[in-house]
Length: 335
Ligand code: KG4
Ligand code: ZN
Image (cartoon, rainbow, N blue to C red; front, side, top):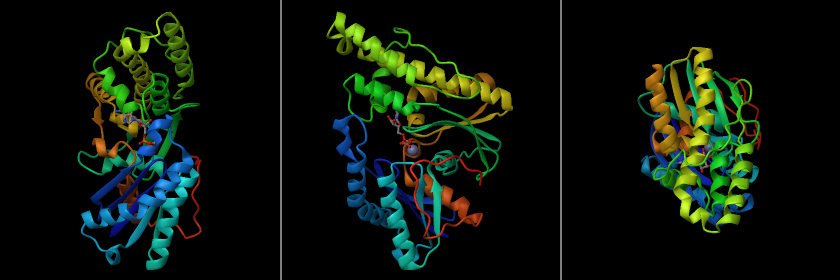
């Protein structure tokens, strides 16, 4: 089965081709227009998706050496995401499917982040516990099979990626700030400045308190020394990053222990973070976990993860009809 997959939930326009469960191409057009604004401007994102979608799909098909006539099903991200962005991908996928009379597969973006682990070897065994950390979500998901996932905890406010991006904005860095903080943190002292580590019951996360404490900390320091940020950038980034990782790992450790799961993974944009990757690997070594971390290209938003999810949904006969509409918010559903 040859599936064309489309991902347009936020600010990356992506298309991928998967053939019998093997990803053949994965093309991502990143939108630069948002850099100067410190975050994604939804209306600009939708417009850029409209401009990018046809050429991105053309390159994805070309890279996979597949003609339009050889596509047998079309998959798209249905939710969650920015509604205007989702509508572009959904509209394109439906038009393509309608024109060629092909089956349509609707994909949940957060489920796809988890299933990015199944694009390439080594693939996790079940039960598998995944910490998904992206710009919009922070979730702990227990996977019993490819399509049977249980959300066991998530952030009650900001996502981990948001904590990175908002810190970066306060430091005067462009969007997305995560990769830049990662880079400066590598040169800094993570114990130089202390920020509070939140503690909520069960497997819930919170990052809004950290955001506020970084804001007040910077305001106070800048009053005393206007050059504080420039002079201490590496140490500030390392200290904030250290706090974010501590918050994440506290709950990951607790969940792995409580549930008795040994196969542990991280997914989503923030799983590209070198500090987090190192810390999870170290924790795995200490606790006897088998740790899985996707390739960098499958951490941040990409259509290959939509394609692999579509592959499993197609095997299970889970198709969507042309009336399926995208949704900005989506409650986690059991398949
Ligand atoms: O999964 P993703 O591409 O999009 C969403 O579904 O939200 O995640 C984007 C987030 C952004 O907040 C970005 O700053 C963060 O992932 N990110 C990173 C790194 N690379 C991307 N955060 C920390 N370190 C990185 N290396
Ligand atoms: Zn994402």
